[in-house]
Length: 379
Ligand code: GMT
Picture 1 (tube, rainbow, N blue to C red):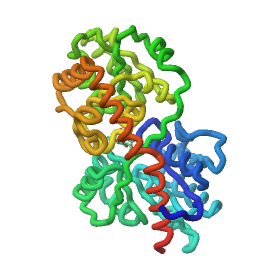
Picture 2 (picture 1 turned 180 degrees about the vertical axis):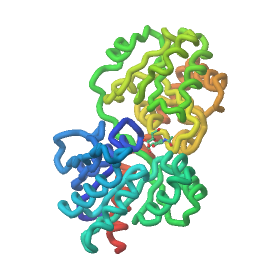
Picture 3 (picture 1 turned 180 degrees about the horizontal axis):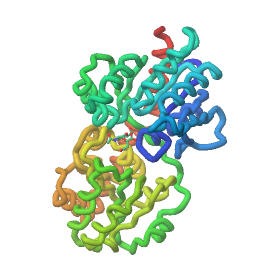
């Protein structure tokens, strides 16, 4: 890898719980650790962004709720703030995570600045920005325009790259840079966590982490859990980045109330993941599934539906299991690994190895840095 000068990078993402914001925060932290100056430009402090770290700055975007407007506007104040921070800190790069509306705001910000003071725009696609909004005729043309005008576009999986090309019909180059996860050292022990979660000796901990949006198919997750036998062999711990209340009735209806433990808005996911034995993911679509990787980093293999970019992360039978999207198949997959701890541990070791060899910060962050230098060189 070539060594280069350090860069000044603006990063925009959604601050709330979601894979794109988590990835963007981790990238900012890693870049700052590697000597780059990083400026987060966002409506709130991204929830996993560390405070008090050298070279890491946060610039809030103030969104006014003018009575005059029926809907509060986020895009314009964001682009004004992007232009302001770019000018004041002489940014080299504006790296936006999730195209809508961040890429459009970045393109507008750049066009507000005089030539010679314009940062390069890098847009990272995370999934639903293309797969959902890209299909919407009210968004599609604006997304295409912002992608075509970006100096570089990256996608978090080959699947998402191909999907973007075919859905949006754009010919431009898209670089694939997979997601990474840099786990922090857990603060509590596995034993403490298992006690806190009420896990009895010999009871397996199955973990599910997500924002619980419909695409995650929580009803399928619960239906699968209800079919796992023996039914007292496990607890399903749901680390919910969204409101679990709409699913509580279903938990009771399925007789799962003593099997499910829910924790909302968890920041220290590492504490929970080190205590987990198995992940369970039932998504309808997923461009990568950062949560699955987070579990892999702790030697925790997963049973998952085989959708989108997940097969780029999991090789079934080697470092996890990919199964069809029905409750029986998911339950049988889980049972097979609960029954066979030796196999489960072997898959877990292989999962951890894959995470370190293919999806660690040391493998992925230099790919972003190379891309930044490439776009800075071509102007
Ligand atoms: O998973 C979510 O629903 C959140 C969403 C996001 O953008 O915050 O996740 C997307 O980006 C993640 C980070 O790149 C990917 O790991 C997820 O697979 C992707 N989700 C979907 O495509 C549904």
